[in-house]
Amino acid sequence: MSKLKKIILAGLLLATTIVLNRFLSIKTPILVISFSYMPIMLSAIILGPWLTMLISGFADLIGALLFPFGAYFVGYTISAILSGLIYGLFLYHKNKISNKKFIFNLIISTLLVLIICNGLLNTLWIYITTKEAVFVIMPTRIIKQLIMLPIQVVSIYFIDLGLRKLKVYDSFYEVEDDNDN
Image (cartoon, rainbow, N blue to C red; front, side, top):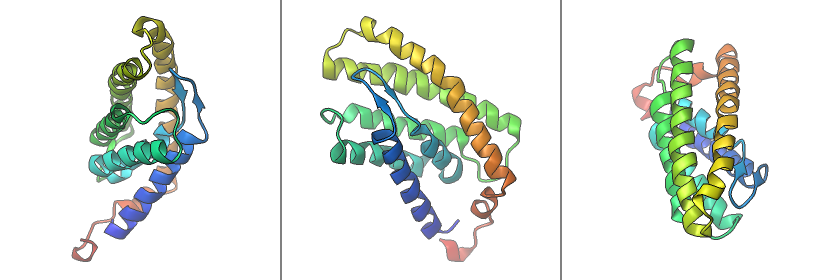
């Protein structure tokens, strides 16, 4: 894929992430329900871990600065960047991969992000910023993560399946020539 295609796609996914997270989500002081994982996971599949880290980090930073929900705290940006890295490492495939391997990688990456980033780190950031008792907020956050696991896995699987059937990925996985660098 040419650098220009990557930049354009990254910009579109970044903007989509901000809109889904800041405008089309349900937010409470201890819980956020959003579909902003979709463009991040698509970025991971198509663009890889490094661009996905940038997209998720910038989406959090830009969203927090332009459309704040409370005071900005760098911990949430760290969680977003780590989520992008995890998704990118597990979901990126330069060539076509089997459905079994994709599903396995999708489940593992989603579990890691939901446990490490959303369950542990974001709960720590909430505790630091709001001084809410961890034992009070943890049950609600655990239930949310358990509900989101199958939703994320199934939704991304079917989006990926649809994109494969439409052969959308074929233009991204073309063999790069020297002019694309």
